[in-house]
Length: 134
Image 1: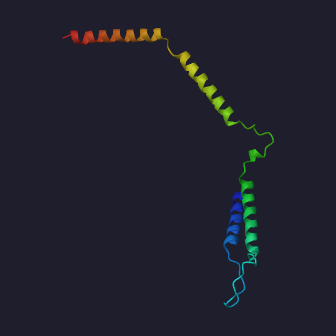
Image 2 (image 1 turned 180 degrees about the vertical axis):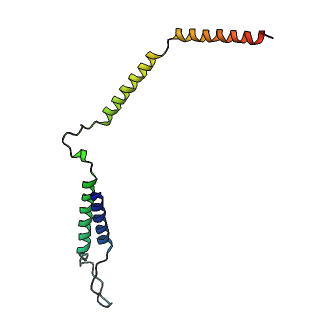
Image 3 (image 1 turned 30 degrees about the horizontal axis):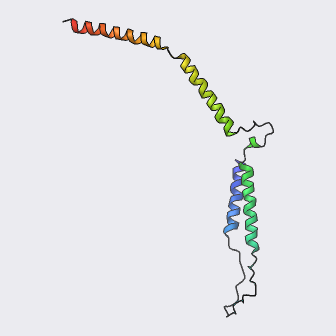
């Protein structure tokens, strides 16, 4: 609970810092200026507040990743990682074992034939008794 509160507080501070426009002194009155020549290089104004906001946001991202990472990734005795190929091979092996067990438990062809013949005999007896009696 405290971790969630701390995360929300950090997120709120970072968003406030990111969207607040810094107060600047009023600019000089608009006067005609000469255009810079091609030989002169124009440097972009350095904006310290944008750099500070980037630092704050990157620190916030690191904080979120650090808090959201599962504790099992920090454990030294964590289970070894299994590659997807090994996982598929293990799953295939389990499925093959289940299928072979199901096939061995299934009745044989002779048993199924005897069962169907017995059902047909019972059906024919039932049909004879129903239609022969008035």
